[in-house]
Length: 123
Image (cartoon, rainbow, N blue to C red):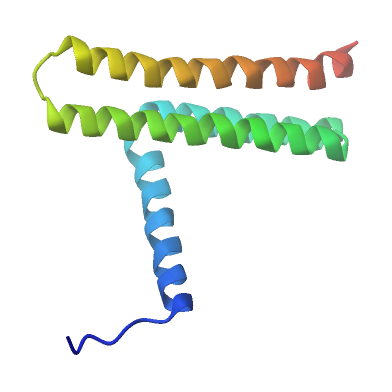
């Protein structure tokens, strides 16, 4: 085999490119991701407006990233499941429900974090 091996750095740069392309595809094509990104931007603006603390920023950024990341994984699970079995299948439905449930769990946790941060700012 005469194929020249690419360097570690070149492979990492390519990996980042694939990841960026995936993130942009998610934002462009998935309504749920668009909503989550919009909410994330809104809450980020609120963080600047209310001058939240460093710890609050860490929690907020982590919560936003977790929700968007899990939403992306849910989308991937749904796409793979639909590819494998385009027709209705209760086992595929079960898998999709579990993935959607994971999104709901982190969304509830993120909402609680947001309430803990922002309710005191209003009172």
